[in-house]
Length: 192
Image (cartoon, rainbow, N blue to C red):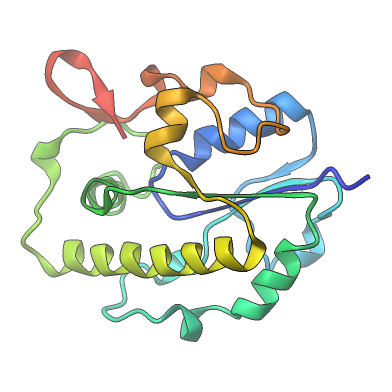
């Protein structure tokens, strides 16, 4: 039986905590942000839990076309080798971009730092490039969900319900609670 689980995700969609929730509940070997093409030799798709963010290293280029940045057919082929695939996205691209911007510009790429809106400069090229990146990742994730015939999970739903569409995948719920979110807003509450 194939127990491998692949989480394909954009950046800043709550995927690190969902990844932790999956591998701690399923007690399987896990690989954080490996590349399905370059790191394939390190992955056992029949048993591992793997988090994959497509073309994440290309986040600062100005124009995006995922067909030029990734071997889509190879990603699709390798995704099919896992027992389960989860595609996690975020509906609100502005909030996703704000989170990505703060992580890349102000937090030295540390993905778990707390922050607030005062750090965001929405009127610069870096922010706009990151927004374009998130929109292109969105196209890729939509196409993968279609080609894999799976329903996409969204950050907004996962963190409000503490569940994913595929109920056969066990989760450790405490990784999906509001105290794990990173964006600090009024009265000490937070959202990623």
